Image (tube, rainbow, N blue to C red; front, top):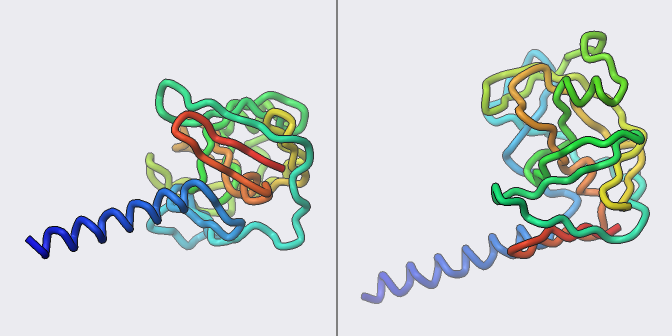
Amino acid sequence: MLRFATLAVVGAISAAGAAQAVVMLSQAHQGPQLRETQAPVSTQVARSESPVPVNAAPAEGGDAALVKSADGHFWADALVDGRRVHLLVDTGASSVFLTPADAERLGLEPAGLLYDHTVRTGGGDSLAASVKLSSVSVDGVQVADVDALVIGRGLPASLLGMSYLGRLSRLEATPTSLLLSR
C-alpha cells in the first residue's frame, strides 16, 4: 500500500512539473516536433538543434489571446510579410515551418530555394530550405526577422514554432486559450 501511495505522489509531482513547463516557456525551450539538421545528416525526430539567436529583437505590440479550436489545437491567423497565413501553434517546433503552398503565397519560389536541411516529419524524411521572414504578427504581437524553414513535403500545415514564440516575453496556456505577450 505504501508503494502505491509513493507512486501516486511521484506521479502527481511529475504532472504538476509538466503542467508548469507547458504554462511558462523559456527562450531556450526545445521540443520534440520538428528538428532540422545540416544535410545529409538525418535525425531520429524532426527538430531543430539551433536555439533562438541571443541577439534577436523581442516582440513588439500588445498582447494576444488565441482560443483553442474544436480540434483541441491552437491556430493563429498570422500576418507574415504582410500576407495572411494559417499556422498551427507548436511549442515543440524549433522554428516557423512553412508548407510549399504557404511559401509560394508569401512570394517565395519554393522550386528555387536551396533545400539543404534534412528534417523528419510524420510523413517521413524531407528536405527543407532556410528562409528569413521580415515579420510575423499574430493579433498585433509582431516579431521581425524570423528564421523559418520551407519543408519540401510531408507537412500538412505550416507551424508557428519557437523562432517566433521564443522571442515573446510570455507564453501562457490555459484550458481554453493561449496568451501571447510581447
